Length: 351
Image 1 (spheres, rainbow, N blue to C red):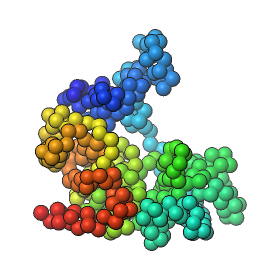
Image 2 (image 1 turned 30 degrees about the vertical axis):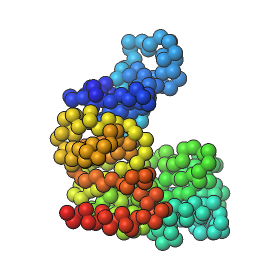
Image 3 (image 1 turned 90 degrees about the vertical axis):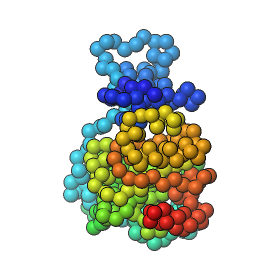
Image 4 (image 1 turned 90 degrees about the horizontal axis):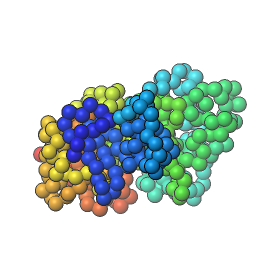
């Protein structure tokens, strides 16, 4: 562990893992491989970072240094949508939701949702839809709507629908106002698996509609959020969003938080983390790491490392581990183990 070069680090929070060739900072959340590190240190793009690694000259002294990689830097938040843009979002969700119900039961989108245990009630409650890529233009013509607000929020790129060929899951307020949406590909080689609207600031999915005086579970994936909600548990999905600034403040306002990490690839050494001042100051995080270490676990998974960053940033909350061999909450739903796990969670909360 060492001091992070990407923020004003007062105690060691920067870890390098030679076996995987990756690094992570548990203070500011920056992470990546050697290319990301060079790009951040010299404020250059991917191509230039590769050239430097290949033996090219370093950037001139005029170039700013020690800039976090783009994935770790705060960016200027787009303005809130105006009335026309909110209407565009709402109309798109209406069109996509109707299109999903028009699909035959054996359509890949319907089969995919069934496989992920997203039942019809959950589809209706969250207005989940399907973007065929052919429905927005006829709807705009019928309603005599300008394409401008659809383009501004990212629904359209030219004449092409941005979410084409994806399951669409909107984020809505309690009164049904659509504030954002995410599109999920149906698998195969299509990347990225998830798309968010490029014209809007990405939220913590689900936070706008939860009752904050009640317990809230924090998970990474949106299908994990849907699985918990399907079983009556309030949940929000981080979806790779950095928890700082406004987003952190929003979660800090929820008094009863439960963080549920994914079980995926190893990333961080538990023993080193237990020696950092950030962890020592957070009793819940320290107890969790001590429990994992006592059980013989040496490294945090990538999902566990993300959860640790979340709880250190928020400052409160409890961490609930999934059973061994289970990747995420949605896996529990698919294997039929969700009810039993929730019963154990309820008993744990009463202790």
